[in-house]
Amino acid sequence: MALDDDIAVLSQAPLFNLLGRDALRLVAFASESRTYREGDVLFRKGDRSDGGYVVSRGAIALDAGESGSSEAFVAGPGSLIGQAALFARIERRATATAREPSAIIRVSPSLMRRVLEEFPDAATAIQDVMADELARLTEGLERVRQQLIAIDGEENPSKTPDET
Image (cartoon, rainbow, N blue to C red; front, side):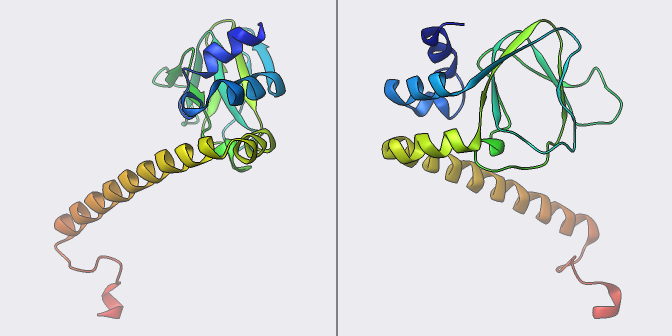
């Protein structure tokens, strides 16, 4: 895929859509493109991450179960797989399998760090988006906590009966 094609795909992907043209050019130039045949496994649940993947062509099924379920989430062109893996080497939470001939752009944590260092405006924009996502996650967890309290009928569900 040509550099300009990679830039166009990256500009559609979450987080990368916050980057300016020069930052996108750096990512497109320094990243790695990989192609897969239908049925190829990109990574397995439990594997250590090697970066985030942006789907440039095809469809990638993400299955968090152990069964290879048809209920898997399918990521298409412009989708980002492994947002957290852009910033840290983490354990993969799902198995990723090509549903059809596919291509991805792999962005390593070291490349992402370089982009954030060289383009501080992009770093600020990404920090703001991730802070908003974290706030929404925290609010969602609090709602779940309140629902669990309501189900249990207890004020402090973390205490065992022996502690009261």
